[in-house]
Image (cartoon, rainbow, N blue to C red; front, side):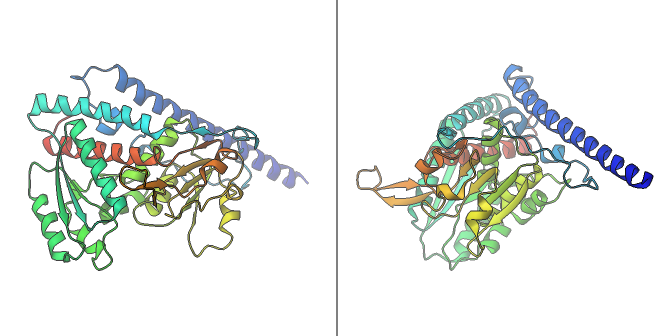
Length: 383
């Protein structure tokens, strides 16, 4: 009996210790985010010394998030917060990615102006577009426009759908050697006959502002490593969660889709923020049941209205990355965009949800500007 009593006491102490550690880490991360925002808002333009991400974004360097992997003997030590409970009658908060992105882009423009004054250089971004996918054309058009507004130089190379790998790789290699270009973006997906991995492998690591180079992806996956660039869409998703006050640590997160562009990197990034992550894909059995257990749902399947209300837990936070072109003769370009999530249904179940358009899309572009600015500052030794 004394042995059993001591064992139960030990487990109780371990549970209390782990609760205390988790609370301290959560409080520490919250204070760190506030410190980043406060310092960025109060320092004058001539005294900013920190990394560009800490100046403009709230998400800290990934290595600063790494903590020891300590397991308690009782797996029930974690207290699941009840703050996300939500009645079906309550309408979800709409996360306005457009306004958040505009704030970030404004601060990028200010920093570009400061760089031009002190170094006499501005960041340069090269975009390579292959084929005539309408969604890709829309993304590229918006990226070029955003560069112009931020004072970033942009160069666009358009290649036909039938072009050879040699043509794409030649463009990439030319931009690798161009000192006025600090970021190179190959718009994905590429036509099926082109080897995406082969093309991206020749892109200079220091100019991989899309974050898809194998070394950048590897550093994203490994604890204790910091990639030069985090892929823009996953980076934007995390920034939206942080700025919306959503706690990530300890939460159950489900990522719908496993593409190299979004699904894989966002699952890795959520793990770096200490979420418990599951991936749902086309071969997953009972995807609705798995997704319904999630506190955070990030969907990037590219299937219109795939996620219905019965996929969502009441109070879940939903980040809809899906952008599916739908014919709309009344729209400016003859089509509109809808997401993976049935938006009207999600509003009645979730606690917060991103719209399409106006949610993740603008953040992806804002993160691209941030990455391009980071690259230029790094290459010119400017802080």
